[in-house]
Length: 505
Image (cartoon, rainbow, N blue to C red; front, side, top):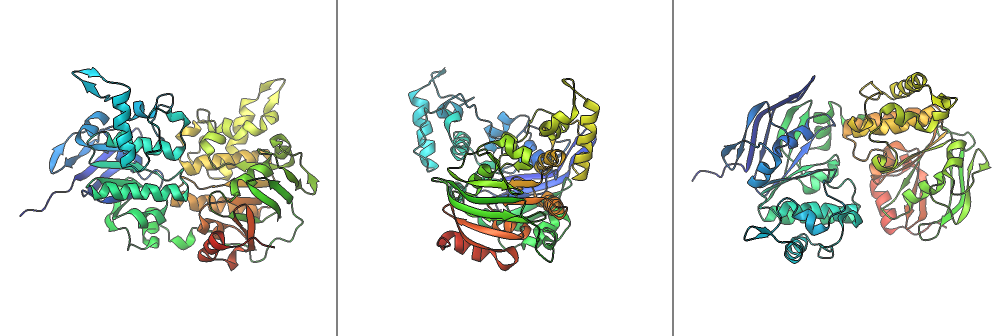
């Protein structure tokens, strides 16, 4: 008896854009009921490949076989009719429509050729949400009122509203907390148990081991490895395939001795009821201090309160011994603080503006003359700041939305360099950034510290905190339960502390 053909087989796929060969003979094979992980740095070709699979791009050459037969995916509708659904990182939901309307958008339930709205659509949506383990989501609620995790569930329900056999998930865990990630993995396991295949794209290598069956690695538009076993392939091998470097070189070396200068940032008794208990900390010039803890431990809230975006209930923030006005971002910026927030696209970047304007926006007074902005001076200063951080492409006139995640983060850092900040607050600095770009960001952050900047770092990834920080404060339920030099800690010790630790006396 002949074996079943692969559910999907893409062979020799090429795709070029003006001046760029995005895909150069890529092969991808996916079996029914498996989780096939697609890895690669930003620019490796992942997005182009999944858009070819989704019918959004037409390949220049190559063949696509679906269930053993050659197919042409001329449009996203054609792909969906075959049973191929794509859930992009930037969810394409309509916020002012209800959950049920989004789920059935474009294929509304009909009876005798007439569209049936209301009760029928809500009932079928409720069944899909029940299948996904989220019966609490109201089909009649506006999508814009849902959390990021709930919106992702709605996108999955929309995919399942078709007779889907393969779902592409692009960075599905990027905006989820650990409990929500666990629920996502449960959903994926249920889908694959029903024979649905999943193509899973993530920068988080630890997720690949948990969820994946096989791995294909892309680099520079080529598949440099295909069908690797996800669980047993060493991380260092995957990193080397993606970047050409070994994993040991991801984190830069720390200074041999800790900084001894007087603190540039001091926090004394800082408190927000219900978020974090009285906190004391110091950050010296040239020092990177990391805050480690689970979601809800108060990490981000501390950074935002130090920055003045939240007003403390008690305590004070001092820069070089001078207290800041509570709850004032303007006072913090004037004192030399800069924040790179967790959600850089929504909270830090002007996505439709140029790199130049994003870099200069906090220092526009430098380029203003009589109410007019000196565009030449602005462009020159932005170019110098972005070149210092090796931002690519080396053209500050391009829209910031066209940059990769790592280069968008560099644009945020360049803004604060141009402003001349002395304290850099980093909240999840490498979220949505691939392994190779992470290494570059780590090197940039370390170099800025070595040049005298004080850095306060928050990350949900414990290895990142331990690999980058000089000193670590471990948080649990809003309290510091341990403080130590990073080189004296390991990941297991930190996780024990955040799960089991008791508040420090």
